[in-house]
Length: 373
Image 1 (cartoon, helix red, strand yellow):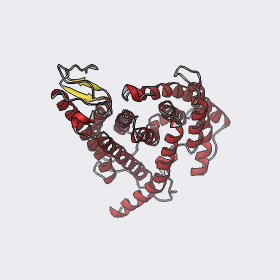
Image 2: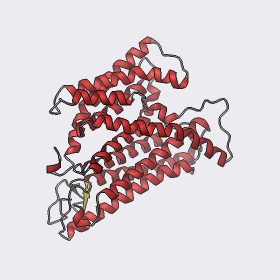
Image 3: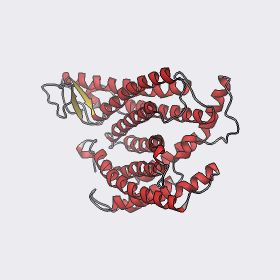
Image 4: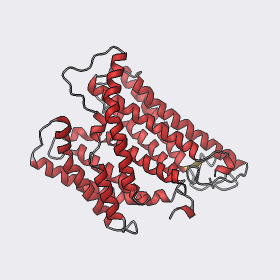
């Protein structure tokens, strides 16, 4: 992979004028693909909670794998179009997914955002094959956090990150800015699922699932704040809206599909939206707080991003046990557990704020030089 592309090989500057593609069109298709993933994953997790194990070939899985196919083919189409434009000597602007990157010895020109998207989709395919082998070996999936499933979650996250970059490259347009923040909001909802990978570690004093969730949420919201004014608030609002929609959709979809395939629901269950309940209910206050603290932060090297992230992580970690009591009618954990988890959430939140602010500034660099302010 070559980060510089000369006119002798395949032209480097990546525009809509040379390819004939309107930048908002493939970006919208990518956003649709990420939402398709979110629907399928939320549905699948709810199925495991309310109905039980499943096989490889189910309707929720169809949504999940369709999302990777849509994203992968969209990214490939844009890469081929920009490559053809470069070979023909036609100029291409960075609004179409960011700067062009030479791939396979400059054989192809891949806009940065679409390259990341395709890498995520390709990784998703490999983990999908592993998941198929896993099902053929063990049959039903008894749990949602199996190794191939975690790989699928991470691959989808990479695809979603590529979508964020694609929208950020069009920062000069309102649809680009709003698409970036909406995609970050989607990442907040979908990425907290990956925190389930550490739930086996939550047997001691620290509830690591909560601490990692705090890190992920703060990282993404602070990225929004670094990208645009009130970015954390808008991203938090988008995530809260998606959380609310899935709160209704997930139980309904699981029960409707169970009735359709004539399978019973689990006995004596309380219908609790599994994925939406993993997302902190305090998103909006945390997002507003981050924006208020960072509005005068200035350069990315300020200590404020870490402070804002630490406070945000602390709030999320402290509110988490009360959220569990509210939703699941559970008992509060011991005070030592609450305090230790709050400290871990604050520390990881500070790290998330430190990194997120810089990622937000990096997202600005995906746009053309005159559109970064």
